[in-house]
Length: 187
Image (cartoon, rainbow, N blue to C red; front, side):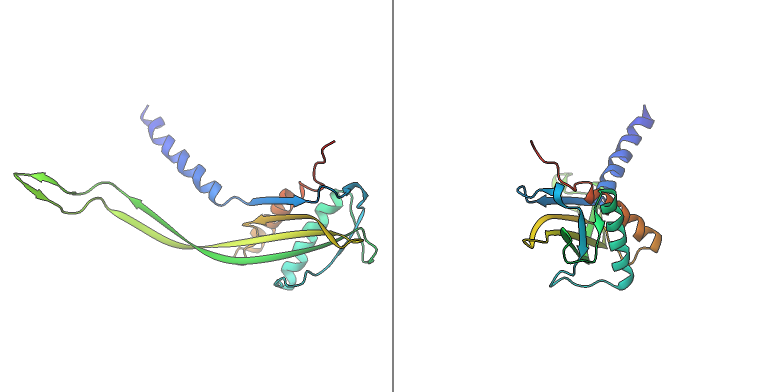
């Protein structure tokens, strides 16, 4: 019984920490677009996007190329490609403050006919920096140059991670992101 009592808080703590670092994937699309007509795509640079280093650029494009090939799309260099595909990548930071109050210690109370207050519990805190890398993939119908699909994956890019970890996170994120391409069409 004692083992179960100690195991439950540990499982709750682990579940909370794993979801805090999970990749968040979202997408949106033009419901009027006929995705079955898109067979080829061409890479384009998106205006106003902050460029990443050449190595990361090649890794991002290779991961997306692999997934799009699985979807039956063929990469092309021709302007006549059905889709123009571009991406934006951002690596930023945010501060996280974690505190814990033990609830133990001397607190205010009544003792021997008088009120006393020696403080309550012990609170400890830590501050850490979390790198949040976001990848946004846009697909435009080449004829109208209209956005038809956009996907966003957060907590994907971290330039400070080891190369193997970077590639693993990127591959996993692109796989999850393009799982939603082509979008499910209601009949």
